[in-house]
Length: 79
Image (cartoon, rainbow, N blue to C red; front, side):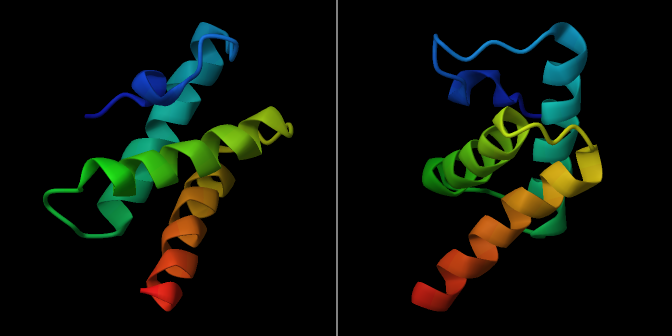
């Protein structure tokens, strides 16, 4: 299980429960993409999209996961 904490800026603060939800969404998004070894940049894009959604008030782990997955689907169109 990976942690989203390494992608949080020093100014971004979530309580313990919210951080667990972000971790859950991050792990689920990475698993959904079915890639064994995610390059750092892929994990960073997923994490930052999940964090951005959480900062906008999203708290549902499924919707947070979907935000991370959507970021990668959009990237794949440009690659």
